[in-house]
Image 1 (cartoon, rainbow, N blue to C red):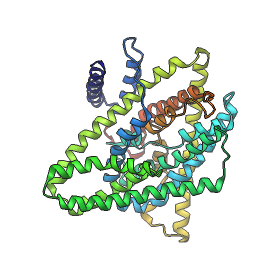
Image 2: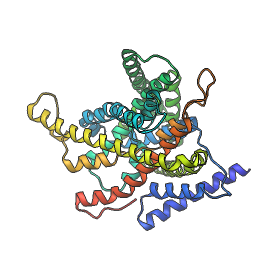
Image 3: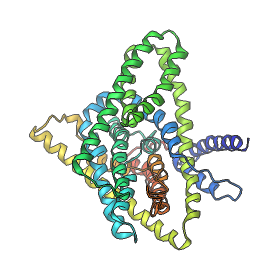
Image 4: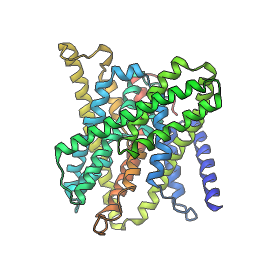
Length: 419
């Protein structure tokens, strides 16, 4: 009974804080994070540790599905080169950059451990990006690139993480095997998403006159798709994204206005609750991990987290501006099929760079680090890696999230709402 009471209190708190954030013009995710941290330090508050498997199953599928469902397929296709560059190439570049930084900065951080931390923090998070940028009045192109990148890059980060963990356990790393597995995991996720999307479209046509059945199936299938893909050892993230894109096209073309409206209202409530809970739970994790750190390590490791956050942002800026230049040159020389609509300016580059925040996926991966190696030896520096991961997630969301509305206003010259 105590657990149920605690869950209800957290839900009520999340709803209340979300309403207050809108009134005082602070981004909702930022205020939820701060509230979670403050509540976590209260003596009477029991420690609530996130189960990474529950996070990946309960939160990720519906949030990814909703984001991919609402993304413009045509704009996604137009900007596919930029999305692919950021969601695959930039993930591995960031992994290496963070690994090099922490290896030479933090005592005791071996190369395999450095790559574990680099992989954990390599990908931006769809939930954070959507939660912070929603309502800022960003151009559709910018939103498409940000959401498209963060929808796809989780698969790249998870692959990098698996090989980094294997390196810690002493398994040899073979580049061609890693590349092949990446393609299989990515391609398998696409295949599962396409198959389930086709099957679901047939089922929905059969039940098209029953609104409740149709909406229930649309709610259930992201979870089924994710579990099915993970069962076959392919990317559940990519499978859910493909499902969302497929269902988006189907409902736009075939669904009645009544179904669209009812489904939209239902999903709006679900996404509001899940988004709010995620940021509140992230804040609640910090006091728990902080208590496990020796006092002498706390401030140095906060400094390390700040250095990692800066490095990740710097690498992202260099790559985004490089992508802007590459697209412009390709368009001018007509070396590859790049449309004028795919080009973007320096202001857009800065907003895309600054919007790259880490979030719940990084946290779930970090907490999911094995407690012991196969020989029974404790996983080296596990608590330090988790602390750094949470520190970077908090810093990226708080610093970039708080300043992003101001940056967007200055670059666009508009008085944009803050949500």
